[in-house]
Length: 406
Image (cartoon, rainbow, N blue to C red; front, side, top):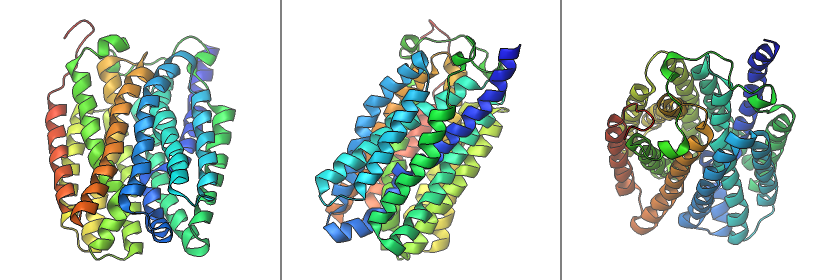
């Protein structure tokens, strides 16, 4: 009984620490890099494909790491994985403030992206899912809402730092944020439920999640899992492809740079709101339905973005896209738990996350190459729209299954 009460209490401590790391982890996100895009390319004369390549390469390597860290989480717990990721990012941000060659940019920004995708984002949601049964939707939604909040605050902090002291100072500020808000709380407070006793969670099962537990091998033999994996891959292409290039795209559409960056912030405010809404609704409605609604909203947001030539249109598109991102990111891990159980959710989510990261790695390169060849983003964004429509059909084709059933 005492251990159970300690676990219920400590689950909120872990959530707070992981949320701090998730907020700070936005230092390695594409929406922060897009703020550095123009000042660094102006100084070094790097084209958009070159800069996009560092983000894509790091994400690609992170995909392979995510598969391993998910399995390690199930076996040993999250603290070492998350702490290593946070330290890699901190060191990378410091190094980025000193670079002068494209190869150095690839090495250090690539390392930050590996940490972001392979260590932190691959493990954080599964960590919270393992700690919570009751109110799991709310707990995961808080995590993703704080992640989105980082996407709001850090581009603004980066923009202000660059405007006052230059882009090198901007990277150093991000290093300090990651160390103070990410590294220290992770080392001090993140633990595994097994550190308190042998049972995961707070001991109360949700109706949606009372299903037989799958092994990772069984999961990999279900069509539902691969349909969901394909979904995150194609939506990842569209999300990252648009995300990294959104500021230069909107500037090309006639918006001021400050308006373009503000649109990014609006998107992430909306993502935080969408994450909270998604988590609350996931405790009441099926995660599959919520994912379908989220992707449908994203289709409309991309269609609107293609024709966005005013600040109002850009903001509306960003708000819809952010709400969609927030709901999908929050509900996806809950959907996986509702289909396959939670005992092996680290490995299950890790492979799924790797597919998303592969999409993240491909999207920026596709958009960058497309722009460098055609001189605009129009055809590329239409392609992203079609991929997003395809993902609706993939999710619609999934249903809950059971071990041994193909």
